[in-house]
Length: 90
Image 1: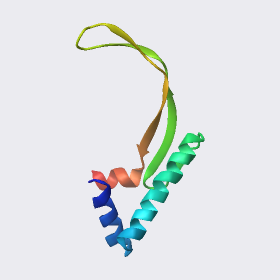
Image 2: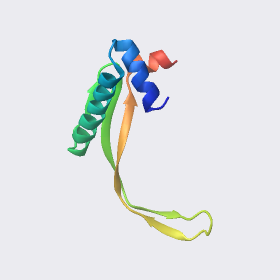
Image 3: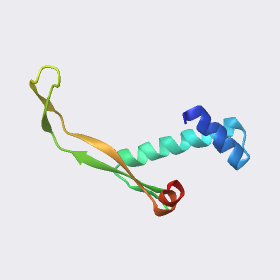
Image 4: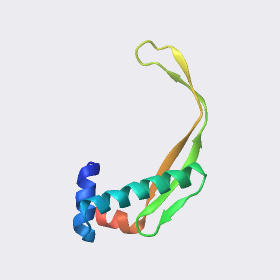
C-alpha cells in the first residue's frame, strides 16, 4: 500500500474527503517526526510505539571489493507493534 492508497483507505473508513484524509496523514507524519527528533517516544495503545535508538559507529565491508569501510553512528527509528495490531495480523 502506498501513500495514495492509504489516504483512500483513511477517507473511506473515517468518512472524510480525500483532502481531509491527506491533511490528517501529513499532520500525523509531521508530528511524529518532530516528536522523535526531540527524543520523545510515541505510544499508540493497541497499535504500537515509535522510538529513536542510537546505532554505534562500526566497521563494515564493501561486498564488491572486500575493502573495510567505516560506517558512521546514527539514530534510527524503531517501531514495536502492539498486541492488538499483532493479533489482527496473525
